[in-house]
Amino acid sequence: MHVERARLVVSALLSSEALESSLLESLKQTFGRIDFLSERLPFHYTRYYESEMGPSLYRRMISFAELVPLDSLIQIKLETQRLEDRYRDDRGNRRVNLDPGLLSLHNFVLATHKNYAHRIYLGDGVFADLTLLFRGGSFQALQWTYPDYASSEMIHLLNLLRRVYLWQRRREGGGSS
Image (cartoon, rainbow, N blue to C red; front, top):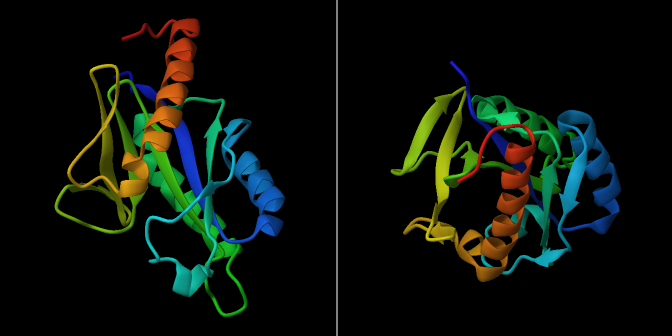
């Protein structure tokens, strides 16, 4: 059976620009060539991470050139967890939060270790969170989509990455939709 391939997109939440180049190099070594890096996006949607990571958090959205199989989400999440652990401070607090997701023709699915009613357990402590659906020419938020992923800026960015994904599929003979 042929498993569809998707675009790997990683959201990196950081509080320090000093970690960026090392983190990007680690991501590149783990997942291959980075072909998209967003500007620094202020993260003001929740204060959930501040007690562990500090104030003035920002996000970088990172996408990789090589398409990955849809069934690789568990392994990708476990790899990003290892990277998060590598960057912990002396007290064991995270200095970076990595949320990997797969962007496909029909949706954007994030991987998480947290269970909730709409999440599907994949194995090894990893759940799939259906974050956005592609309908009517754009990604659409669902009732449980986090506000940052439902923002117009994020939708615009992911729509752009989807266009690149469509181009990759056509180039590889995977068709388009």
